[in-house]
Length: 446
Image (cartoon, rainbow, N blue to C red; front, side, top):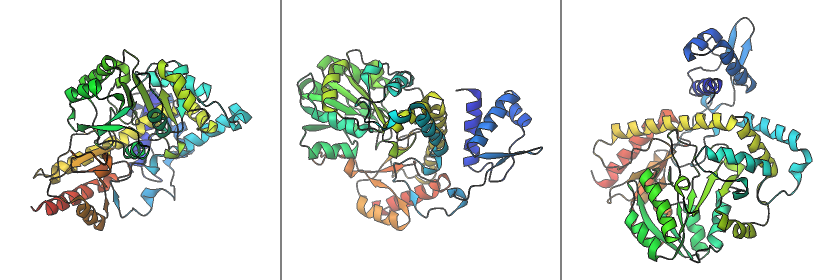
């Protein structure tokens, strides 16, 4: 990332967290240059960008000051509820001004072309842009194999319904897994089978047996920052899944919907695919806006024609596609990605520290998740989840039960609640975790 973008991201973070409060003067250009180890011109460029985004303003012969925004949540009333349930991105970090600029530029660039029906496969220039964007995640594909979808869900539904070249019919899903997709598969009567995945990973021997003899059409998986577990597969597991897919002619549908929410280097299963058996899905909703409803589908050559036959009509706004193309090209996406995953990592760090402080008896089992937004809190068998959630609600703490993340006929379930830091106010995380531990202790009979 360019130096001025790094400074910009750090300054925005400090403003957002209140280190530079409304009306406060920022460090002088010279002081900031010394602090960041860069030239004065680089700092001026970063400050100019902050001023352009209405985050700061300049006073001649005085310096730069933080803009006071009456509608800013942090200067208003703090919500009573400690929200560990919401999966939507934090409203305070939505890139409104950035994306508004991109929307205006898209209209100026493409004019009336944006108000036609468009190509069912997606805006050609966006697909070309996605070639290099996805290559940054080690997903290499020509534009012809990249299709734009109205989010990931419509793509998942098409893949479930369409025939695959291997002639098999059963969809294999991790248990637990994405609730909406499980309910869709069950409602449509699509043959579906579950395989256990825990915070420790997946049983590769069982997976191989399922691939060998289960009539599996494709295996649906979230390789990193799993919902609801929050964990990611190891490199060995990702390589093994890709190898087994080729060996037994089973496709893998890799839902990498949280691809940009972690700092660590992570090559997806697709990067190890040597037999063209991996479908790669990426959503842009978790980084920008949920309502943007844009996703990318990278298909093996053998699936392209059938998928295109099922997706005959465009389902994604051309204006949104053009704005996203500009947002990626001008570096705004990369800058915002660094900002948002840094924010979530801080919240995750606070959550882990709070759990260590209050969970001394070890009643709650939780993996050491450091990126993404989800963590599984595995509970003692004696705890009644419904009663626990009611008691937490009475204390203004909101969580999600683990029950809906399983197929209805799947018996070997873990008892847990899902914790999300997506909209959790960092200053109240400790208070919320303490309440959860206390109520779990109460429910377990300690």
